[in-house]
Image 1 (cartoon, rainbow, N blue to C red):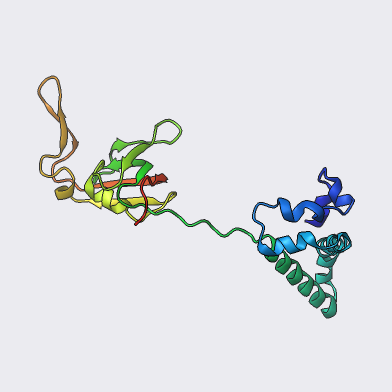
Image 2 (cartoon, helix red, strand yellow):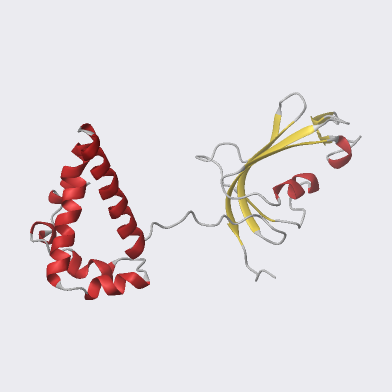
Length: 206
């Protein structure tokens, strides 16, 4: 990381003035960052020298004797602690989990017990995702319930027995000649699978 900074088109690195503006310009300043920013220019200059030494020279100490390796360890610790004091690394954002009344978009498919696809949004590149409101039974209730508690990026797969799907009538259409063409046979257990894309919450949590 240290050498890479010299390749950046910023004079602040080569002139050792980076810390003059760093603490006030970073996106997530901590209370300690204010004190670092108020420190004397000479201290900031020394801090940048320490940073470069710790990132460019000290890493090679890990190949040295025991004393050099221990020195490298404590330098790495010191740099990490200083980073956390003035600009902590953001933690992973809290995932939103589906609740009733959330608007959910997803790609999905439905197949019969013989793995014949009869419904769905197929391939993301060529089909639009499905948009539903959770808890409103915009899809089969069993699948709607299975979505609750999941987050964007999750894959939800559920088998639905005939009583909760298309029952003894199945799903069919009548051809022009009067013949019945079944899409889902009577008393067939189907499988619905979906990949959750987005979750939007338009109400206040209580």
